[in-house]
Length: 166
Image (cartoon, rainbow, N blue to C red):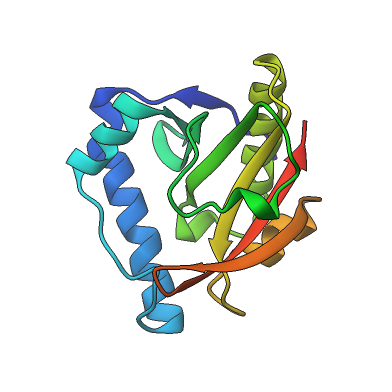
């Protein structure tokens, strides 16, 4: 599976919000209400565009995946669980359209993220996922070769942390 990530634009914001909401709705339908049950707005996506690097993957001209890369530590990350590095990049808000999940799109997006991070000479990629046996993406990151480096709770939400050295 080949995926090419490209920087998102302001014009993509509504489609990205719709994609994020579709993923949230799919998780809620499959696993019930949980920490993943929330909707984002176009304004929230525009915030990501202003404050981080937001990328999309297209399939037949439709946005089918998106993710955020940032050098600023997200509020939910507790650095004591990660390797002590000077230049990590944080991966957040990664989503793949529900109908395309389990077909290699997510794995291909992660491979592209690694290329992007190596180009900017970062030390590693850090991320957090919901710590839930069914709805959490932790097992997906582990299968992709990421190292589980700890667990924590932030505002009552159980998280599992992963890193991949660049």
